[in-house]
Image 1 (cartoon, rainbow, N blue to C red):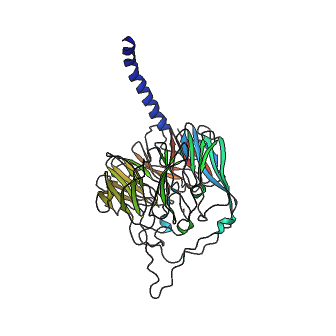
Image 2: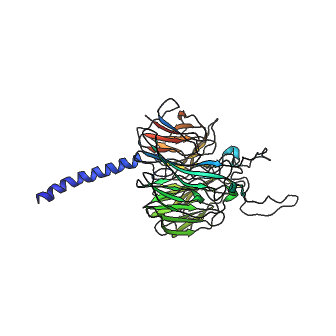
Image 3: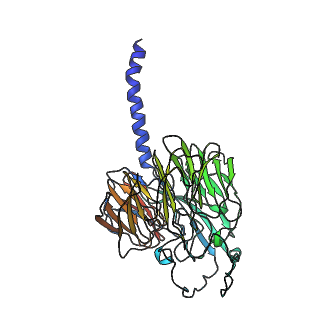
Amino acid sequence: MKLISRLSLVLPDVITIVLITTSCTQKQNWTQFKGPDGNMVVESANLPEKWNNDTSIKWTAGLDGAGYSSPVVWGGKVFITSTFPEKVNPIPERGPMQGTPPEGGQGPQQGRGPQPGQGMPQPGQGPQPGQGMPQQDQGPQPGQAAPPQDIPDTSFKKEIYRWEVRCFDLNTGKELWKQVPYSGTPKVGKNPMSTYACETPVTDGKRILAYLGMHGLYCYDMEGKLLWQKDLGAFYTQKGWGTGSSPILYNDALFIQFDNEENSSVMAIDAASGNEKWRVQRDEKTTYSTPYIWRNKIRTELVTCGRTARSYNPETGKLLWELKTGGDMVIPSPVGNEELLYLGNPGGRDNKAKLFAIKAGGDGDITGKDVAWMSEESGLGNPSPLLYKDRLYVIGGRGEIAVLDAATGALKYQKRINGIGSVWASPWANNDKIYFLDEKGVTRVFKAGNAFEQVAENCLEGSKFWASVAVAGNKYIFKGAEKLYCVGK
């Protein structure tokens, strides 16, 4: 009896310690694209609000490869993927762009292209959404020349690349290990201005899983030992732009949205063994959006975007609902809460960007039903919408900011900031402030709420800051083209 009595007193303290330890561990780790919950919401009072090249820089590490994937962090280790060109074709010279940019701010000057970390065409890669890709070929009209054919470019077969997975010490920036999962001729092409490492890896603390698109899926332990690898096939993508949707991890299963022009599917793969748990074919073309685990008040769903958004049972792959969203191609990833899911597309030449709020519990084709609201005012671009304290924050490709009421879709304000480079990275929230990073390495900070008030502008040296930030405890990890930065107090 005395033993039972003592255990009854001790157990609550043990449970409390375990919960606190687990919570602290989760805050120290950034396990996948957009963070462990896929929402870019940070809970830390110890992160710096201001930094520059001389302030709050803990360390930097030089990068000799290229990749638009975002870093991930676990247990004092930072992981990235990149590719190194060993033999490449010269970049063809481009003449001046003919005609005027499409209406609606969809042209290349408006930054409407796929977002890094979700993988995809990047600035200067060629046509952006809204510059072609009509959903139905009507054929040439009287007095018009026939449209050019999408002829696959096979020049990549003369190139050689080296794919790398690299691990750095979070506290010092020292490289701990580097592995080469694949080296040789690419299996598919990409736009000359893109990279072959656009997908963000994932980690569960036991393993690091690097999905390299058509070049395979590779699983390493935390010390860099290869555990298994898997070939998912190689298929042509839209305009030959390549791949980019990042994998996500849930309940020891890796979910991959494998969309292309020939054989699209979504699949679940056992993280420990690499065995396929299920795969569902998709009536979808190339997309660049990363899937999202939506934990709502009714159930947990695996949500994918495309010209048709779809939800699946993550355990079985059963289709739960679908919604026709339109657009030329979809880049932003979804986000949600217990009541509503928010997703959309950046539109195209003949249609505006649309942002949807979807009610929990939908079934079948929910087009025209189970939609709480739809907005054509948000100016949704490449960065995924940010949900924070009952507000949706939408950052356009050139730094346009729109804030909407998350429950009703009512527009609270829109603001354009001059002098901003293209924005590819997803915005994040911390301590009642909203942060967004442009490609020049400048992070603008403004207050959360219904009125715009900028409070800081933080600059890092470098270029092509297209990767989204990773957060580890009281440190930020930024990835530019030339350097990896650790920023902290």
